[in-house]
Image (cartoon, rainbow, N blue to C red; front, side):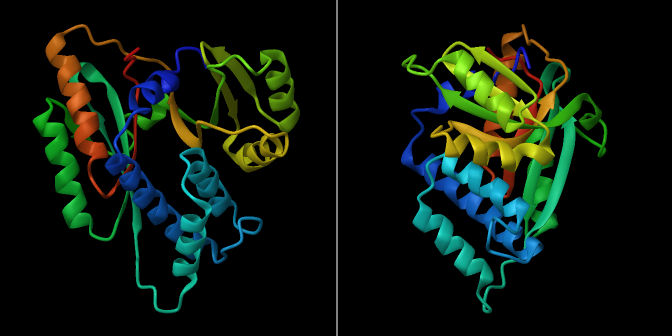
Length: 244
């Protein structure tokens, strides 16, 4: 998975304000509610989608109490939250491929908001399938080894033994990829060995990357990402911009 810029993005957002963290927790809570309702269970052992979301929540240090409270809320008879998964695809400045994943209770609100972001930043919202063909769905786990305390060969052996398909040491980051269907098993096996994660989720990983050279394109692309991520309805923004 050479060229994956996940760690670079993590480093840039490590010092995010508490408001950003709160917004992240709110979005993950929405994913938990959907996972519980669609999976019909609040037990991650019997609900693989919930297990995947919990791994993501733990990686961003969402407190266990928050996770449990959200699961209990989703299981409550009086809970009327109803969200629909919607995906948008399009092109950012310079032809950068962009996939936007949203959970919304009102498509009529979300679609114009996403379209406005693309239009405002010199991009184009396209039809479903226009860019997703150039991405692969993979489980991606990032372990922080900034202090150098972990032996790379040991982590690689543990990851492959757990069922991972690839491992790469990218500077201070140890990046592990696996088949999406194996993600929960790999996460569980590595947690049992005492590893903690910077990120752990199923991602849309680009098959190739685009470098933007024009300053205006770089500014517009960053603005597009920021506008989309600031939307309450948007859960994930995947793209093939090489912004290292």
